[in-house]
Length: 357
Image (tube, rainbow, N blue to C red; front, side):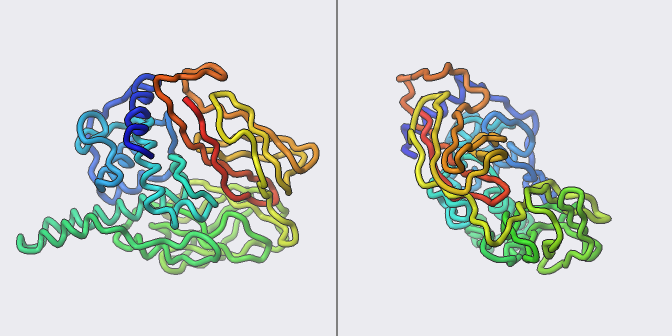
């Protein structure tokens, strides 16, 4: 995103949302890193947003601001458009790990499972460097500082049940289990699924698929893997892991028929528009009921498709103080809103609609 556009996005953030300053500074400790446990988007507040900004400010390439709110040492607990712009730069910097797995080529600014997994790895790296810097001789501090700016080990997030991503979190420990991402978010019956994270118990981990429990989950490479039951009904399930150490956050897994193709987006129109624009999507694999649009600012549920080939949704991010179709020429912003379609047949590739402000 051009610098001028980022600055304008910052103005929009101040005018439309306001900025909530944090009363205390968080440290990049093990327990702090564990705060990155929910998806984040524009308009949200919390200590996890504060930690998110600190991780982003750990690199000059993704730094929120040079001075003022959001700058290093002045991080806030509010997720505004300045934060979103920095997240987009972060996603494009690590696109192979956070964008490619969901079919996107441009950052969306939405902090979902893949983005959080990479954030967590970097947070842990920063934490490990901070700890080392307190015990190494002065002569080696420069090498430790250099390590702080180095990227964390890459994670494998799609295509198999590999848990190699867990090795990137090896410097981090947690008293409670933290789920970062799945090896796949759509799986057929009998397929192996890997769950990456930290803090899992050495044994006794139970995978929950809705009301179904799988008690024979395997602990491997710091993560957990399981086989999708062959008799489980098809559909979308909440998934989480529990053990004597506690419960992880909930994510989802869509159990599909291996013989049925997932939804496919062949086109959508228009490609850009103002707040309240109705987008028509064409493709295949849409269901009469129960289609959802996962877009940068949230999930739009229960979208019908009478013919299985078209569906419509309205672009209306929450909290924006705009009227339908309102143009704000003083800003001249095109804000990318990445989206994909989910239903009981699976997940489509990603597309990007540009919201004009």
